[in-house]
Image (tube, rainbow over all chains, first blue to last red; front, side):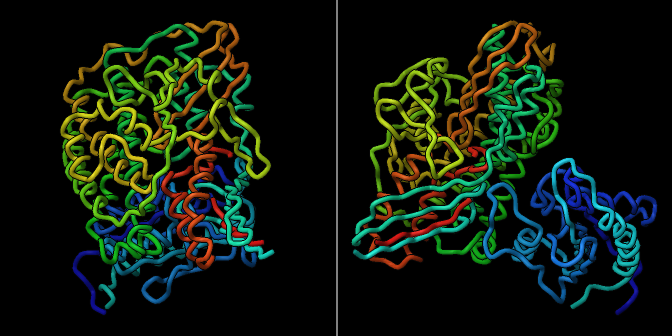
Length: 164
Length: 429
């Protein structure tokens, strides 16, 4: 690992719909990141499907996504996936003709060589995704920890050289 | 008696929640049921009591991929009820934003959802390993369509700039110039796409469809026209209910639309193309001939070629509209509500989308009726499935399932819109 003269370009993406309960964890984390990251770090909350963002991914050296995950064990539990070493779980088949999911889009971007190698995904287990429903307290409580971990992650990713 | 049941649970690459049951008795296919179990969405009910001005923003929420279709049918119905006729550049802008929707919707379906079927790939990600440039171009086409919708509609999903009478804001000519450059590139990409999909191995399969589409005196239809068929129908959109009706069926939360006199009919690209081939520019007609299409195509598997042709047309038309664009003095014509009934029918990417509203004197919606294209195509999908699966009954369930899924995807069905995704069950007795 060597230090580089210029910081590497990092994109942080908060995915989800803030009007659908715990699906709003991505935008909530992005809100908490305001003022905590260097100016050269781009933060995005895409309004549409993540596929539309893909064309811009090659402008960055590293990507960090924050997204909600389906209930598995405990609401608010934080999962970290380093896609250099692990696969993001995805359904065996695409289930929508309107939009690809994050895992499918990253998979497609990698096949098309339109994604950097360094991709980190934070997934927070949700409990309720109802329209107009409030974010559950356990999930909201996880937002501060995820924001702290994203800040540390960004600082590390800006410094490290591309992993091979 | 030998019984066999093939069930497709949650068909992939189709929007919405549904399943397919095939019934085979003594090696004979006796039934096909497209079960749609996506919960009803009640849009027609919760439009009641809302103001007419809210309608385009509410109905846009019916679909994320074709919100313009719902918005356009709604605003035309409102203007029809209130005696307003929108012409000039406002009408042209409506046609332009519809071009954006056809480009993004067709590009997504042709490249990402349907092409893998013909080439034996599980999905577009697997296909991208061997056909990366095609997938890149497909994504670029989709992006151009989305960009056009965002420019005119404010955002690409559930646009917010459409209103009865026109738009909340209309663009300066200079705002359209960058998208024109993208559309020129998109047109070339679409022509390549037509030539690529034309090389696919298509099943030898045809049905004698009754095609139903809009027909306009001068234009390939988007927003206006009479409702015509290749049999004897040529009616004003207000007379839709004289020829067509929706029926409840036990296995679907979506209503089935049928011709009262003859049953299933087909809407969408195959129908639109067959009934309006003479309205396509000669360059697009020549491209269709190069792709092996005559003026009428009865093979639903070749609908992928017609969708690609329609992308070329939409790019061409968008460029023509931009070239002729002059910013109108007002963003919207004035609308005066009155107690009335109004009808709207426009060509969504998947076929005609028919709306009827009755209004109170102050423009409050008293009743609403929305007939989306996939609901209209459901009986025809089931008839296709019977015909496609019948010669395959001795094949394995997996083989039958694969052919049926591909056959359903010929329709680019949007089950969410029509509820109204898919599960295949083959029941053998």
